[in-house]
Length: 270
Length: 264
Image 1 (cartoon, rainbow over the protein chains, first blue to last red):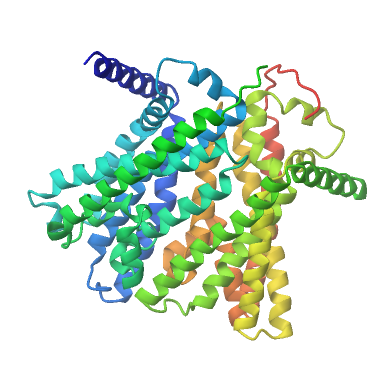
Image 2 (image 1 turned 180 degrees about the vertical axis):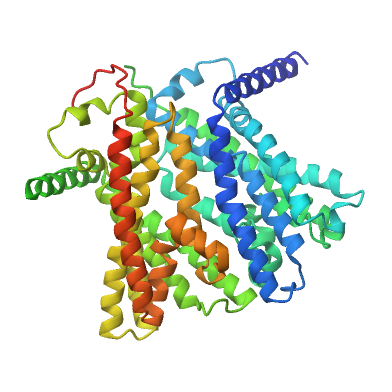
């Protein structure tokens, strides 16, 4: 019980500190707003044109569903959870890892909550503003107005956060073995980008690609993009189940990699 | 002028030699980036398969689009990777040493660093353009147009990054602002060119020159369009001249933060 209280206090402290920090540096909000406009905004305008050319329907889906699906992807991206691997690589490269290991807290626990705290402020502001804009411009699809939507969305969102953190932590932990994890990071990041439904929403995926997205951790980490479609009402428990399976599997990999990494680390002093 | 160029070549050579010291990392970065870039080709080819042909754009045109954007990005960031560090230089005060250098300021900054992965971009881009030329059975005339279009897109890309990173002089911690502006410029450049129509096409050609580095070059080569070539050339020269003016004006805003540093 005491341990849990200690952890909650630590989480509280990390989040509070980072949110205060975000208030001090409002330009970080600018970067996220620009990124969402550049990627999501422009993309939605293009899709609007493409749907118009196809008489409003492509692959049995309409622009409203596509717009919300793409928006969920980019909104989730403002949390910048993927940067956890870069922070880990920096810790190893700079020797900061020595200092963090010597503290009476779990390094992984601290790094993951730190990453959540880093993007939380931008995520809330950008998401709220963009949601309002999107409701006014494209409206809400029927599937987002039924009772099951919000609880299942929250559930898959939480699973997506955990899964993303585990996925990128594995990449980050590779820094203990290889000097530069960037090439691995790029490949994993692009796999998530393609299979997560970023530029090409999942409704437009070819069948084989949809299957890969469904059963790989890359696609599973972005299942929030599935929530807007009709199929979500029937398949949500299956998709959340897949996410949970990947969380357990990747969680175990992270655990064992970290155990190995702790033995591998060599402190050179300085 | 020749002295400046010799200096630039010498600095680039030293940057490459220095990066190549970490051989495994150097090669992994180059190969990793080349693999990474193929993601966009997959994406837009699947897009065409699902949505159909838009604006006359075929899968081969997507390969060319990624080729042009990768080549211009790669050339500028491999020979002039220092330009993206401008925000850090100004924030840390490290910019002082560039001001004191007797060399051309812009060349000195640009050649101060190298992004190794950008070499992977160049390789990827050249391969893409080669594949494109092969698929469309390019005539000699079209091959020449590809070369000309690469030059034009590289000039536009250079001009855009100069303008974007010149903003470093106007903000206290400008790295996030310049990153955001760069995203606004570069991300649409990699989107399916045929989907840019009407007002959006106008904005991303004349106000934000994203389409000048990928979409327009593809259309120049595909349609053998001299009018588009002329438009792109004029805009490239215009953007380059404007960028130099903006840079020179922005430098005057710099205030040293008294950070003493020597060497690199």
